[in-house]
Amino acid sequence: MVTTHKTAWFGDRAVVIDVASPLDRELVAPIVMRALPEAVVRRGISSLMVELPRPDINLLADVRRVLASVDESREASEPSEAPAADATISIDVAYDGPDLLPTATFFGISDTELVQAHTSQRWRVAMMGFAPGFGYLEPIEAPLLPWSSLPRRTTPRATVSPGSVALAAGMSAIYPTSSPGGWHLIGTSRRILFDPHNDSRPTLLIPGASVRFAAINHEPTP
Image (tube, rainbow, N blue to C red; front, top):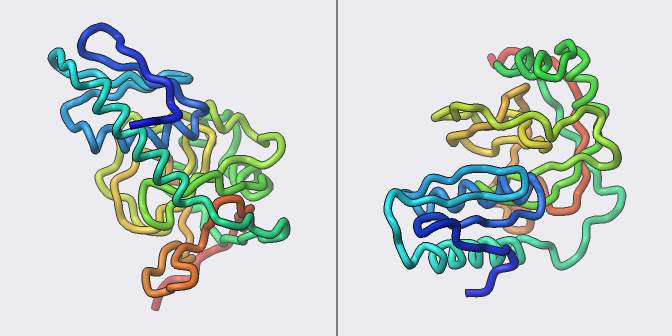
């Protein structure tokens, strides 16, 4: 199958995948891990290495098959018409996440300054993926912090609650449903990201739309 990603053997039991960006890397890696559960996927700056515990002459073909499915899914998620230039989606966030302070410390700033940067930054939905309603948000214009320097968590969480607002690898995101996750959780939102009963627009986020976050305090649920 044809794929836009360049691939090559690395020895007799590993394949290297060239990725276009950190966003591309973070999209491709979990898909490859799910499709090839025996493989170890190692992240590089501009590549991924897919390694098996033993030689397998079919590995390159298997990797290319997975990448072709990624490309097909990406094409299917692209809207037929670009969103209007003023289609900015505002998302209220209570910045109460367990990783807020550690993430601020990573950047060498206070948690208040991190919230200010996250809400001042304009974000764009680069693509959809990982789960229904999950949008990969990239900075528009110059990043207000070196977002790309923040790696994923060393140990992913087994469960991340719906509405969790997160940062990792130059991107921000909101988890639409409960799922495992390796991003840094800095807040929570009550916006519905995925509604399977909404036939006209089941996902709040669409590729190309801009997103702004607004800091609020959640009132306790009665």
